[in-house]
Structures are given as structure tokens and as C-alpha cells.
Length: 231
Image (cartoon, rainbow, N blue to C red; front, top):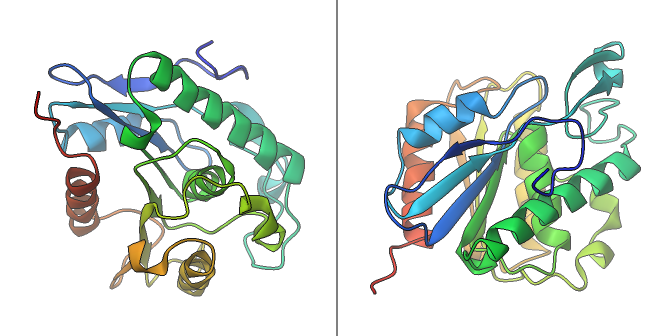
């Protein structure tokens, strides 16, 4: 199943309008699917970029009274000191690395791939980028945090992405993943990769969601990191 060997349907894909020479893999948040983000990315698409929005498998989530919903890994709590599903986070990260490998086999080098995500998906994209040996073009991390942060810097010792560019965005009125958690994550990231390449943007009055201004910032970041290749 295309590298995603859990019980999830195939990703939502916005194909490139011409030959794909770059890709964006974007991971949705808890309880969501890839469709909404595929739609949002289609609105800012570039003709040489393929957009891949996988769907998380369905599993019981402790945070929501063990109700089953799409989730990349289990979540016990959303405070900085909450216990974390280490096994699930690592398993999910391996699945995303397999998805990246699939695109490399399709002819898109990993350094022409941006990994991104919202909330739980953003958290997984940060963790994956810091622990993979695949050199990536960058990460777009929205309204999220760095999972298993106590495992760093050891976990990123062999990381290929010390110089990757990161766009981190967070609403200052986020009631679910507090703004402070996002800004602390950006500070933590500065100790793990080249701090000059980290951009942290805040959005006044934005709750746990995205906004048009943020989508424009994402578009500019993708345009800068994945320019067209002149043949």
C-alpha cells in the first residue's frame, strides 16, 4: 500500500500540472483526513509540484476517551509534561519515511521534498525530519510541537537535515496546543538545526486552525524552497 502499511486508504493527491520535479507531503491533524489539506494546497499549487496528503489510520485515542478516529499515534495529553506514545510515534515516522522513499523511487529526490503537517501531523513531520537520513527541502509545521523532545539531541545525531529550512506557524489564541508550546518548540529546534533557517510566525487571534494569511506564508515558503528546475 504505497509504503503506508497501516489500515488507511491511499493518500489524497494533487498531481503536478506538468512533470513533477518536487513534492510536498502534508500530514493532517487528529480526527481529520488528508482531503481538506489537499484542497487547501490545490489552491496554492505550483505546476511542477506534486502534493501528497496521506490519511492517518483509525485507532482509539486516549485523549478522547479512547474513541476511534484517524490518528498518526496515540495522544495521552496536550501539555508539555504529558506522557507520549513513543512506540506509535516511531512507527508512524517509519511509515512517513517509507512514503518519502516511494517518491524518491518515482523520480523526485528527497532534497526536493517538503514535509509538513498540522497539529499532530506537524508534530510527526518535525520528528520525522529530525530522525531521518533522507535530506529534505524543509518542513512546514503548523500549530504543533516536537514529540519525544527529551530524546534530542541524541535522536537527531545522524540526521541529514541540520541545515533544513523550517516554517513554524502558530495562532496566539490556540486553546488546544498552547502558543507557548509552539514558541518553546521553535526555541528547541534552534538548538538542533541551523537556527538561521527557522522561521516562527504567529497569527493574532487565530485559534487551533489555519487562516488565509498563514496559507500565503506557506505558499511563499514552498516557492522559495522548491523553485522550478530549468531544463
